Amino acid sequence: MKIIGQCDIKEIAEMYGTPLYVYDKQQIISNYNKLKTAFRKHYTKTEIHYAVKANSNIHLLELFNELGSGVDCSSPIELFLAKKAGFDRSNIMYTGNYESIDELKFVIAEDVIINLDDINSLKRLLRFHTPERVSFRINPGIGRGGFEGIVTAGSDAKFGVPYEKGYEAYKMAKDAGVKHFGIHMMTGSNNLEPYHFVEIVDKLMNIAGDIFTKLEIVPDYIDIGGGFGIPYTDEEEDLNIELTAKLVCEIFHEKCEKYNFGEPHLKLEPGRYLVGNAGYLITEVTGIKESYKTFVGVNGGMNTLLRPSLYGAFHRAYVYGDKANSNYVNLCGQICENSDIFARHLHFPEVEEGDLVILRDVGAYGYVMASNYNNRLRPAEVFVDGNTASLIRRKEKIEDILNLYEENSL
Ligand SMILES: Cc1ncc(COP(=O)(O)O)c(C=O)c1O
Image (cartoon, rainbow, N blue to C red; front, side):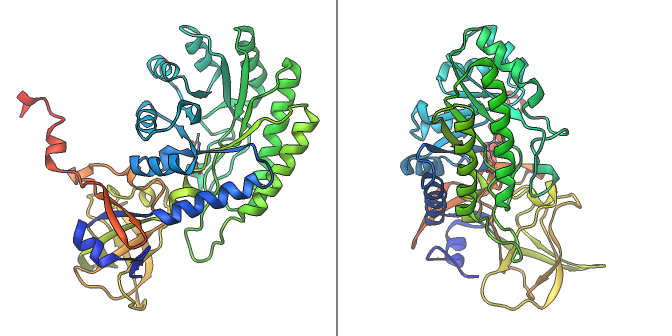
């Protein structure tokens, strides 16, 4: 591997240093257009709200705003960044969980659409405000994800209103004087199987049909969440997004008719699908150790890219150039934890200190999960657009860490 967009990886690494996150702008644009076209073909009232949590770099948010996307935010600062990136209130949605009163006050003051995580969230909200519109995140009782850590519905999930309590939640809102309603779910991340989406949308539509028929509510919108997956290995295939959109819209139309919903907005909240495959992490080999196994250590680790240590996620890794794979190694970082391993028993080329190792598909849940563990500094981020590379966030400095201490404590 040598190129991102039309830029030479070695040149980018020399210019900005390593470790370094690099995002391919044209890839993001193409992902967004593909998803939008697939759904709008079958339902023109489809709205995409990019899930800011996947990658909140303000320059990416500005790009999504230019593309006409909305956003879904999960914290007050994500909301602040979305506004700073230029999003209009009407395109901003907020989906928190275990929201504090202060958080709810902040979101209400910003006058954006809110998806409440629980009946008690509504009770906290009603203590100081009766909103015009309410939507609950429903746990439809089923969830699926690329692995256990990213399943966000079902009996083990901390998220959402269990669907059996959905009626009670909406009744409370209606009795309190709320006039407009939506419904939301997010059941799991990184799904590659179109029929999974049919199953969950069918379930949500029936839950919505049951609750809203009893309460004589016609929803403004139905939000089916994100969860559209990307392949992380050579063996996995792309999610067939055209088929997914067709099947989802078919069931959506059918149930809207059955339950007399008219034509509510169909909202999607993709994160990974839009930015995942656009991101690369460039690292540099700092040490090679022949121990009981062979370890190749690079200058990025769980502090730079947490997913492998957090959930056992796999990211394909390549050495800059065109060396063929020749041996098996454990690819690790520099953090003092034995879980700081990107991949075990990886078929890999012979490397030397100073070689560049590039990890793929790190555009989603990459930089946003980076930390200062071991007091290592967070890397810089670069946007590549064709043959142009530009810095979109500088590398952290020691001053950024020192600034957090009270002046007189140093
Ligand atoms: C509420 C909500 N919406 C959207 C997303 C984005 O999910 P994905 O990146 O799988 O599309 C998430 C991810 O966890 C989420 O919690």
